[in-house]
Every structure is written in structure tokens, then in C-alpha cells.
Image (cartoon, rainbow, N blue to C red; front, side):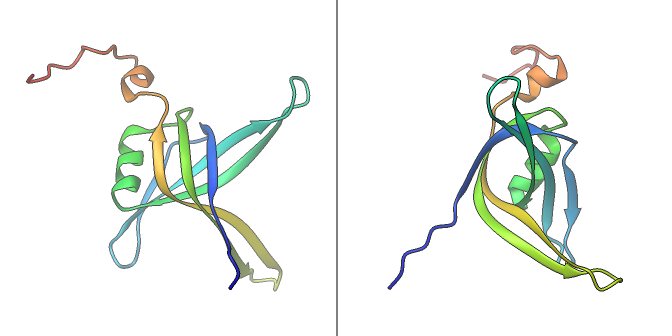
Length: 121
């Protein structure tokens, strides 16, 4: 029996606002463009990752995140293959995330300060 592992951990910033969509079966999903930067100062390389969230994670990401938000993503790496109208074959990597942690707070991004909300407790 062979052992396999497919796990991706990413920390980076969103390059655009989240795109919330609905599948043909009515389920929510959200696409993110996540940038990570590697390398030494002066020789950095930015990599862009397509990330997809589903269900409540998708709805919350669309509600609370925006371009520039910093997040931690945990998921699996998948590949989508397709052929365009000219017969050219394409392959695209995608991270299907099952965990997301917001590293920048929605209040900080909106310019609001903690304590601006009236909490009932």
C-alpha cells in the first residue's frame, strides 16, 4: 500500500476582491486570486494562485475580504484540463481550500477601530 499526501499551505494577499458565485446545483463558491512572494530582497518573485472556497467559507470570504486582505489558506492542489475552440489543450492549477484564516481584520481594512461597534455584552 502506498502513502500519498496532497496538502497546500499558503499565506498571502488577495489581488482582487473575492468573486462569489452559485453553482448549477445552488451551492455557493468563491474564487480568490492569492499572491505569495518568495526570494531575497531585490530578487523577489510573486506567484499567483487560483483558490476556490465552498459553502459558508465562500460566503464569509465574499462578505469580509477584499483586495489586499491577508489570509492563510489550507487546502488541496487540483488541476483543471480543457481544450479551447482552436483545439489547444490547457491545464490550470487550483487550490481547493477547506480552511481559511483571516490575518487582517475587517475593521482594520474598513478604517474602523475596535470598539466602534456596540456589542450587547
